[in-house]
Length: 494
Image (cartoon, rainbow, N blue to C red; front, side):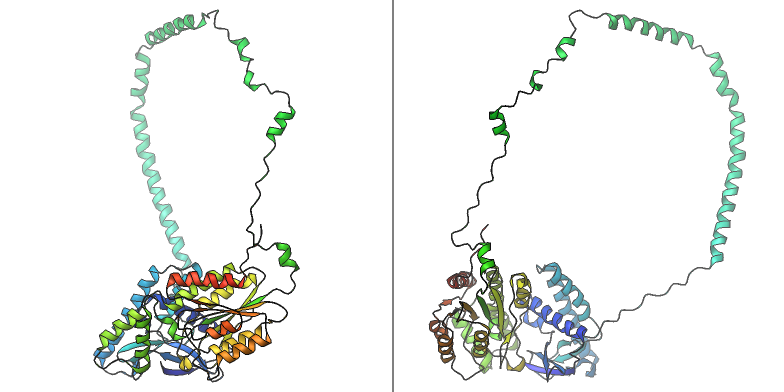
C-alpha cells in the first residue's frame, strides 16, 4: 500500500473529526460487498505527524497523478467514465445490502459526498481514486422568485367580479322568460285530470286490509311466556362456584441450573472483567472459502510478488476470488458480536484492536448498557496498510493484561487472531509466562483462525485453551466453546 498524498488537517475541528470517523465507518460497511476494483476508488485515510496531517493510502500500484493535470482529453474522458461506472456500481450494490436505518442514513449521506466536485481525484494506472477533503458540501441555492405586485391581485379580482355580473344578467333574463312560458301547461293538467277514481281504489284496499289484521287468534297470547327466561336466572354463589371463578396461578418459570440471580449481580462488588483482543490486520481480509494451502500461496504472492507470466486480468480475478465473502474478518465480527450478547451482565468488556504496527489500540471498559457502542466499534474495524500494517499481538497482550486485575478476582482475555506477532522481536511466550506468574487468576483463551498453533503457549501458560476455526461453522462453534469455557455466559434468572 502506497501513500498518494497528505493534506493539512485540523484535528481540533469537531466536524472534520466526525466526518473522518463516518468515512471510516462507510468503508467498513461497503468493503465486504464491493469488488476490489470498485472499492479501489476509495483511498484510506490515516492521521500522521501528531494529527496535523491526514495521509491517503491506496492498494493500487503506480505513480499517482491528479486528474486535473492530465491534458489528454480522450484519456481524461475514459477515466471520468470509469469513475462514473464505479459510483453507479456502488449505488446499485447499496440497494441490495441489508442495512439498518442508521447505516442506510450514513451511506445515503455519503453517496452525495462521493459525487461532490470538492473531492480531489487522483489517477493510478488509469484507475481513479477519490480523496475527500472533508469540507462541507455547498448545494446550489434555489432561484428566488419575485413576488407578484399587489395591483395584479386587484386586477384579477375585478375581472372575476365582472364575469360573474355578466353571467348573473344572462341567467336573469333567460330564466324569467322560461318561467312565463311554462306557467299555463303546468296548471291546466292538474285541474282537468280526475284523480278521484284512484283515491277510491286506495280507500277500498285499506278498508279491507284491517279486517284481516284485527282478527286475533285466541291461541296466540305469548305474554305469559315472555317473563320466563330461565337461562338468565343467576344461581346463589356457592364455595364451589367461587373457587371455579378464581384465576389460575401463572406457571412457574423454569430457570436453567447455571443462571445468575439479580441479587448476585447486585451483591458482587468486584465482578470479573474481560478484554477482547481482535485481529484487524490485512491478513484477515482473506476468504474462509479457500483451503489453507491456497491461502498460504496467496500470502506468498503478496510477500514476494506475482509470477511474471500471470497477466493483469488473471491477477485481478485471483485477488477477487481470494478476498470474496465470507472473509476471516467478516466472520470474526459476526461471531464476536453474537458472543458479546451472551456474556453475563455484570462483566465489563474492553476492546484491544490489532490494527497496525507498532502498538495495539485499546478502548475503555464498556458496561452492559454500553455494549451497543462496543459492538458498533467492532463493526467499524477496517484493516489498513498505513504504517506498514502488521499484527502487534505482543503489544495487545501486554496492554490487555495491564488493564485487568487477575489477582483478587478472576479476569479473562479472549484472543481472535490468525497468526503471530510480526511487529516486535520480543518473545510472546515469555510474556505469557510472566503474566501467569504475576496474575494467577487471569485466564486466556484463543480462537485460532489460521490453525498454525503459533501462540498456543499463551493459552497453555494461563490455564486457557486454543480453539481452531477455519470455516464459518467452525467459527461459531469454537467461539461459543471459548466463551463457555471462561464461565462468563450465565443468563440472568427470571
